[in-house]
Image 1: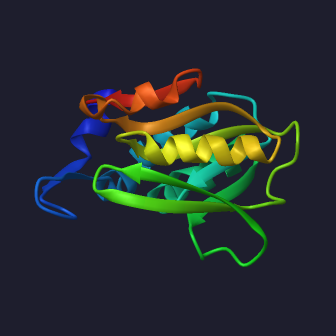
Image 2: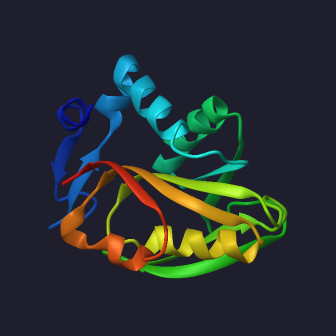
Length: 169
């Protein structure tokens, strides 16, 4: 499956700014066989109550994974996008900083949670999401990503968390 995933991810140089190599997953999403295989693989990794998807491309994977796993879907969004009371966490990323939020009541103490995203880069967003989940009292059982950019060393920021990557580049 690794080779098929890599074949279907397009590199877009200098996006969203010069020097960044953007990993475009839309060709993979357009291939229903590959997309289903990715969703099925992630959905089978852990027994969970909730799947957290990180805005925005993480939503694309996390929602069908939640459906397939028989779990609830929880969006983690950029600050100001959720309509109810939230918890927030700020973090640095490879080209700036940001704040993410989750609804305070999205997870309950004891919920087993899998965090899903498309790409692990520096690990800032994933680390902030882990902290948000833990602040609700829920348990992070793992993080699953489609692709890990090993040269950015994001895994180092997630020590102690079960991180699973379908492909590592």
